Image 1: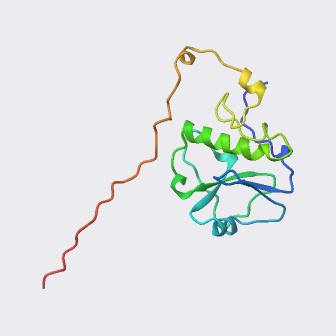
Image 2: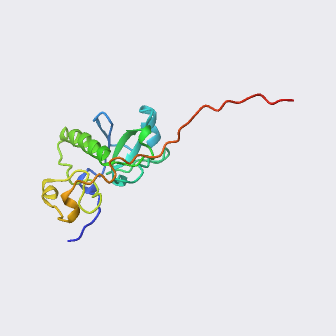
Image 3: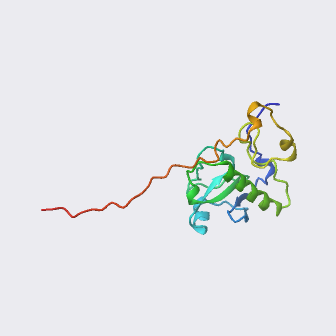
Length: 165
């Protein structure tokens, strides 16, 4: 079999939407829910689909007027992360929080997240951990994206003087 990037929504009950907040709380919605509704309940945070998270790429949010898709898993993240580049550390943190949130549930969610790259999965199961690709670059740990953050401008106060007549 080949390397394939997949989401496994069939592992999640197709009639529910699951949202994991930054504090590790799992919210399960059995009814249709819009992004704006959750953003009003959680000011200063945005929703992103777990299938769209990739290390080294910007984190995009779900549009406020969009209805969340049943069978999908979403993260509720702080606004500071919107459009920032996802680093290894941030992915590991999300992975840890999601793992803890899922342990409270009764299902095994180790197979429902996308494969990020050739051999990196958000929630790798024991088989995926055993799978290693040997190459010359494996001898030294890679910090390719670990220090990369999104660009932020240095904002300074602009002093204005009244116009002279």
